[in-house]
Length: 291
Ligand code: GRG
Image (cartoon, rainbow, N blue to C red):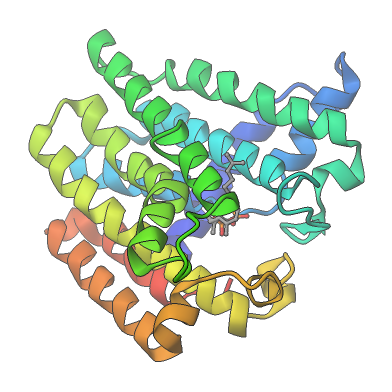
């Protein structure tokens, strides 16, 4: 199996379920539901839901029981993209090949749609079939990944880098991406093991997710330099224009590529057996992707 094939399979299920669950465009209040459908049904890779389902496959769990967790992670991710694109943050015009939400609708609605996605994620996550205490643990894991020690903290590190005279260091950059990109990717990989109450799998999937998250970000930095804007569905070359420190500015393209390969090897070494095929394929996709 290739990572692309697994992503296609999960995307079909996730998109259909999102479409089924979301109220129609004409539901009241209409700007909110138009915004939620616009943002959530846009053509994203669904990489994080694919990780949830791949980890579930490794553990032999029923995909139907995990689908709410896969959707919950995508809701948090989508909110973070909407808010990141706002004028107060990255001020972007293009996302997933379409105008960003605040450009297509309005800034207030984009902020509120992002706000709405967060409680929706936790509400949907609670629909996973698992022991109540495990569902609470899963909720805690997703909240931690989305909060100050994860996504939000990472975004603040990015927008307000530490003011060393020597600039952003390699350690600063690792901490930033561990939180901004890595925490949610790690949560996606780990949630099925949390729901199953399998401590050894939690440890292995944590290490797997951290390595995949780092490799994902390094590839993102390389694609910002060398990627195709059409394939990416968003502006490229922004890091250089903004004078940002990235894995490419610190290590060069070849150095960044070598670190991504090391992380891939770490990820692959964490999970074994025939049912780890989708986890292996996704980790490999991350370092080979062109979008
Ligand atoms: C607003 C709290 C808050 C956080 C924003 C998402 C984000 C954090 C910033 C966007 C900029 C960026 C490069 C983030 C790193 C993570 C990343 C590469 C996100 C894009 O994820 P993909 O490639 O996107 O999975 P699709 O559209 O395919 O879902």
